Length: 97
Length: 522
Image (cartoon, rainbow over all chains, first blue to last red; front, side):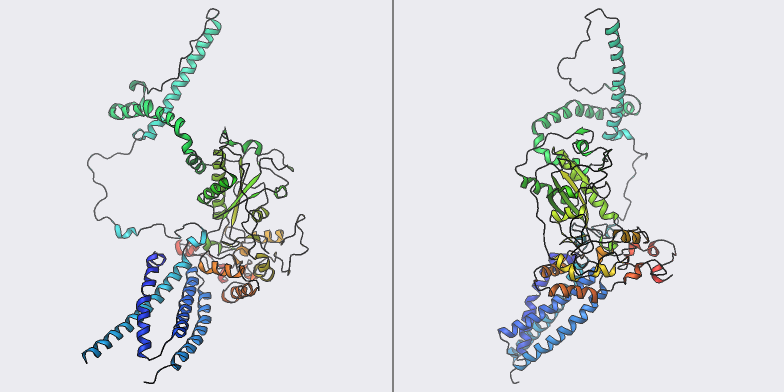
């Protein structure tokens, strides 16, 4: 099955390159003045997003659909709160246009 | 102006590509998660195709034309066309000839004894007899007809009997030791005989023969390593080895013995190899009314039969103890001694791999082995606070006590259950009978995938108990499970199942029947 293959893992790794390049272009466009700790926070939030998706879909794959949705709701609220906080931090350092 | 336009396009391209890449990555991670959850291999510990019976989608390979071309008069295959079939005919032929020869011998012996002058003797055959293939005309029936029709096959059979097989016997004498383990392996897969004699006889017999002389192992460590490897190959998901404590032997019914009373532990039961497999996950989640123990029972039994024969083939005494051949031993303490798991509140052993979803078998042997040590991965502490199995038990047979202090089973302190009320509920259940709810409701009984492996690791490594409490809370709040009373028969309950049965167990999906569904109050 493709979803269990190493090829999928390779694709997940490969698309990280254009993803990072796109993120750099976006932050420059938005004049966000990114530094190492802002990138770290952004990376951690994105990792958390992927982790939650991976976790919820694992539950779905196990057939625990109800648990997956409840957990998704629970995680969604946490991710939303953290995401809003992250955006406020990033926007606070924005250069004057 | 041209440069500026070019930069803008490049940056937009990068942003668009980045957005697409993020979409792909999130989708791929979701797909990988789905696969990690549904992968049947994580259910069992061995590679498993789940409902898929084919590696390849054959519908895409369907042949356009006809699969066969008829080039003559068609007919069915004759038995003598196969070398195996001819062997069987030849054996019959040879047996008849042998019987006739024996009859002639008897007449000759009678003559020597009764008629021949004193000192008369029958001539003794000199030197080893060279095997010879019978002359063509000595055959009869279909075999003779076949050989007459295909003389080249007669020649090939003759060569095999007169040259190839004697050469193979010589080769075996010379090189046979090199193939000792594959012989033992092959013997193991062919095991089928029942245990009908006491250990001092049956444990030393391989079929009707005595076991061969014991083969030397480099060390007990090597012996343990090899036995664990082959036990996994024979179908076991988990294997451990320990010495046999006589207290774990039953005080009755030693299989194969006419003595039905207490027995002394046989001296050659020095070591015991403990192993087991989990149940097929979808059906065990459909307990208590749509599950069975038989699948894991059968798998562990087959592994036990193979391992017993394998050990005997290497020249050591062995006896299997398995669900379908019976036990002379109590399972739980042996599993604990062998380091396969810890006993839980529900009285069952909890393993680090598949929790309580685990059915076991054993082989006792006199082969010197390196033993394993009991393990501790926090089950005692977990069971003290988690009472999910006690809450869900329809017969309330599992204790809600905060600790197992004061519990005493034949002098040993451990969690106790009320076996009789438990058994009474078995007799009320539908389907393949039994219950197994505590086995599957146990938070440790989860698939062996990254998610649950991580949870187990976090729980074991947390001395504060916070992970323990968090996991129990999640199990109670996030997972929808019927209440204990719902598993009872109507009118008190509705024959509920822990989870929805898989579609391949649902009658309405495949059979043209319209049965009453008690789970829906019918």
